[in-house]
Length: 346
Image 1 (cartoon, rainbow, N blue to C red):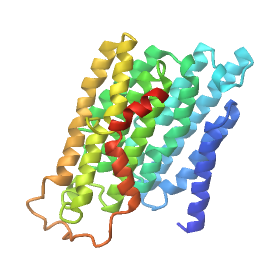
Image 2: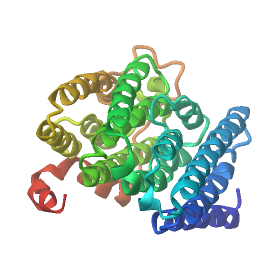
Image 3: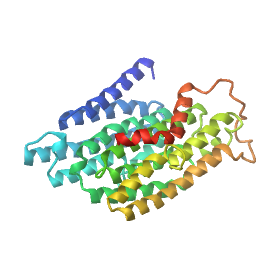
Image 4: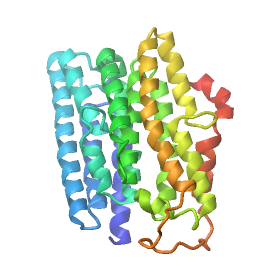
């Protein structure tokens, strides 16, 4: 792909995201989502591999269906109430259809089946965009419409997402698929709290995007996409592998890392809302995800394969770690001590 084409597609991604997050009217929000979808498709299919073409096709069909549902819910609400404003979504059937559309856009269970397949067929940098930037516009719409949505339905979908994300990621050997199921599991945490404390959903999304960006950029630097090749990277970049271990533990939500902060605040808020059983269930289900994060961390730092004849010999990297990864790793692991500064804004 030429630099000019890449620049056009990246600019379109930023434009589509900006249009959606700054709009008050359903039509402009929908137009921004469509620009985003059309801009990311060439980035998914740029390798011309059959799996990449398949991933782009699946992504297009899913996102087109979700966009049609979103437009249908907006039109239904406008038909009954005369309102095209995003925050004035009041018709119950329109709210239900919108919940389905946003769940499909985000990859929230039970509309999650497309996401691991699309991530597996994409390059690591595109997979990073799909996991973070592409989820920002629908997350913004979820934030804006949260007072109108059904909290019970969102709670059930959230618990299902956390369960399926953890359970289906246990047996994976492809790192992109593991991170896709990790994303589905994290979306469960965001969805369960959005009706009660929407700002916590955004905080969780920002911190999740930060930590996931660190993991994807690290994997892109060491050119790894499978667990078997991850095992040989310790001899090549020991410092980067150590930081990957800490970032993965942060993504798992273990204290004293950054990833613990949103989970702690969400559990606290759910308990205040008399939802202690839901908080207990989602906390226990996140232990499933913890298993495959620990498996990734173990493969990255502790083990070396007994027979390395099938792999190219790895040598110490002569070039230094990119400064962006160093900054992202620091923020991904060390933001918990400044949580008293964050709490007043949430």
